Length: 171
Image 1 (cartoon, rainbow, N blue to C red):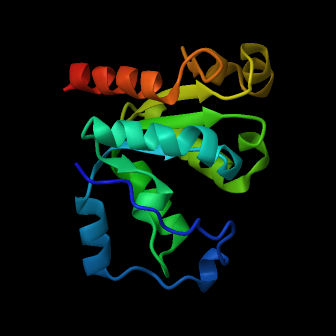
Image 2 (cartoon, rainbow, N blue to C red):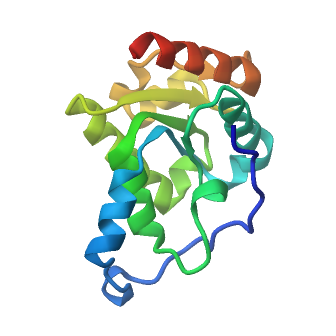
């Protein structure tokens, strides 16, 4: 089991795609050959209270988690690393909050997660943080259809335990 490493938070915005150097064929092969059990999508404002404890608890279950603090390093292309994480994860966790719907990157990730879920390539597991079912329904009726866990009623550890059990049943 890998310990939760602490890195500096990623830079909130990346340069436009046309300014990013493309990955070499070797780098693409290496990146795509890595797979993850879980991809976590969230707003940076939710990191300390919800996401970091959730990622730590998932890792304690010996799950391989795509989480920015563990996955991103200096000089990485944020978009490319996110795309690899989205493409190679079995489950996409999305922490829905008021801040989540204000951020561009979280919307980008949500679009990828929904696309993968609809295609049957990945299971989308929503977590509501300070967000009610009615608010989710107003934003997206299709997201409101999903059974979710709320941080109002469950701890990060309890949610991680349930996700780990879900993944064990899926294999």
